[in-house]
Length: 204
Image (cartoon, rainbow, N blue to C red; front, side, top):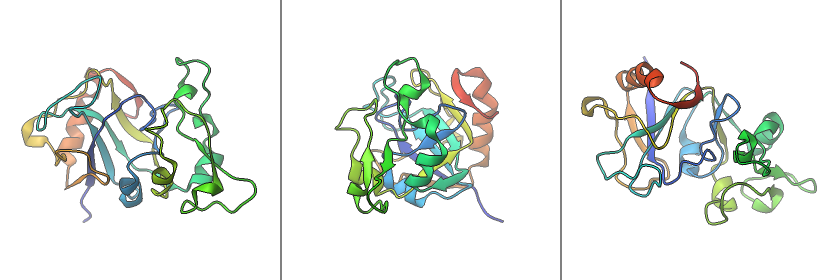
């Protein structure tokens, strides 16, 4: 019997860009390149508060949950560009979900797209600053994670998890994250308390 695997990492930003919880599906297309390579369909990902998180800074050991998502599938960047046009950024109105779009890497028309060759992709302007979006590192993740089941909490009111249910959380930044096996009780707790917290969207 396969155990449920969870990847946990700390979030330095929670702007709705990475991850992007809009249009009924949570996607992770930038940052965390190691995690995007390693995670497989069926695995879970948890994003936690960190000391440097603007909305809810927390010390090591006191992290709270910003989101929990189950990986449905992994897409290449060309597949993501074609299959999720609604996730492409439209920088007109900050209140518009498309403003936060993370589908920013368009295959160049004059070459065969290859994530190992960043010049084969066109980077579209997005809501994030240039220091946050790093083309080579983003494409090095090879895949975009698509999560159709997810629980995304207001970053200023993340979910507190009882100590006995807390999975492994890295003490600092981690490209791949800390892995925890068999986290069924943790997942059940999050699902049970989702209705009590303000969230963007998700499957309950």
